[in-house]
Image (tube, rainbow, N blue to C red; front, side, top):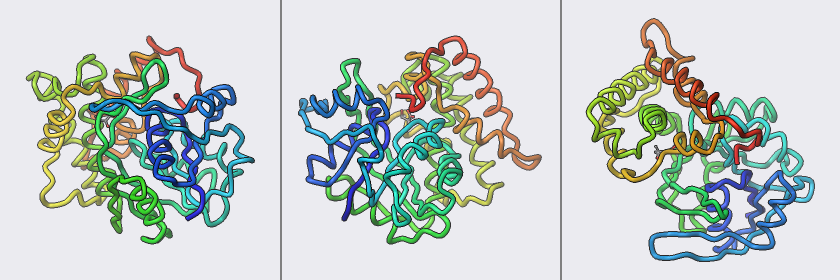
Length: 314
Ligand code: KPL
């Protein structure tokens, strides 16, 4: 197994690079900011979890020319930075490189394709939750599972490149032949929780506990599921969109969702890639007025809070 390059020094990028490095995987974290890359390289990363904290030394680089050749590139930047990040890491990739996205929302695959039309692509979701503390350490909320599968001409063996790497670090990772149902199931959850918890300024648990928030979230969940069905995505016979959202709210009750964290920090949010993408896919058979309205409201809130010009949103 060759080198793994993780792109993006946010909480998820730092956490995964640190877990892989600890397990002896040849991994480089790519941070486009030379100063911050130097600092991270010199000081390493502190991972903070329920049972304490640990310090992990990391290989961090800023110049993609020095990073490659990469066997596996994993994009861990905000969805709106995917195209920029793919262009940035391009110098480290070869024709055989497997490109992986586990990012939130829809549109990441298209962003990578715009930069590398023939990329070997795998995509999926992860339920691991982490956030970055003010001092740059990583607070781990939960180390969850990852599900990944091949896109278009990629093969199951390509998806296994990621799962084998993840498993070396003790991270649960399942390979599925078609990742789209999994991606849409996560989208249902993000579309119903993120804008509502974000605009209300509440932790995820309140979305299911507060009656008027829950009525709205449940309606959004149904709306996204109906757009998925109209897109011929089979969410699975046993999948109940409303129950799925309720379950994540309960499991992550004290979490402040990523959109809320972004709004509070004055960063751009991923709303365009979550509810905004659902609204774009709406049709007369499956309309998405709630996703459209929530996108507009979050964009208005962003305009009030916005301060970040960081292309990676980190
Ligand atoms: O993925 C999340 C996010 O915050 O973006 C959820 C599942 C809502 C957890 O907070």
